[in-house]
Image (cartoon, rainbow, N blue to C red; front, side, top):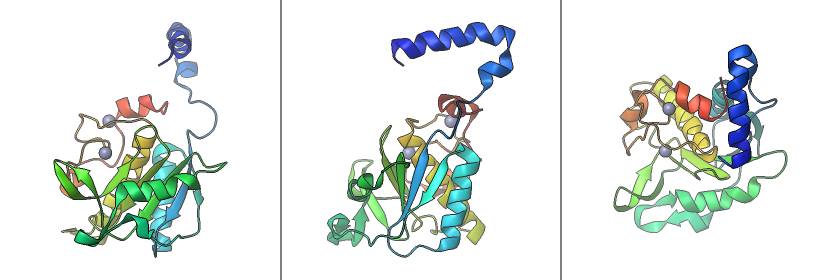
Length: 206
Ligand SMILES: [Zn+2]
Ligand SMILES: [Zn+2]
């Protein structure tokens, strides 16, 4: 928080006593416009669910981009999967007005260096306070009890990664979708699929 924002939020506190509704008001317009970028074949019905989930939870605008082939530069031959951070490098230039963030979505398995392992399979990865993120449905399907649960995991992971790009770090509330999955998809299953009140207020959402 810079000094000016701090002063403004102090001013907001003094307004709170007199007019709580005015203080709780969200800033006008969506907090972001997300370019939704399919990497390789991706079912249109999944894209529609992701778009609806992002709009409902975050109030963001969503722009659907045409599909791009998965970039060869991100291919990791030893494990025959794609490196998530290289996919994000490929995605960032897709952020052009009016888009302010990009979310890549793929059915291919993706990985990054995490938990002391060089190539660790992940559900998704996002720039903290940055432009880009990527999710994969590959691990959403693993040991999933139903198609509905697979889709819950997919949409929840999309909101989680966009949350990182909007500056949210992992949340200590294990029911909040910003909880750290620690590489286990069942961690996602145990969330409400929504942000906790603290994370919502950090984004300026009611
Ligand atoms: Zn995370
Ligand atoms: Zn939270």
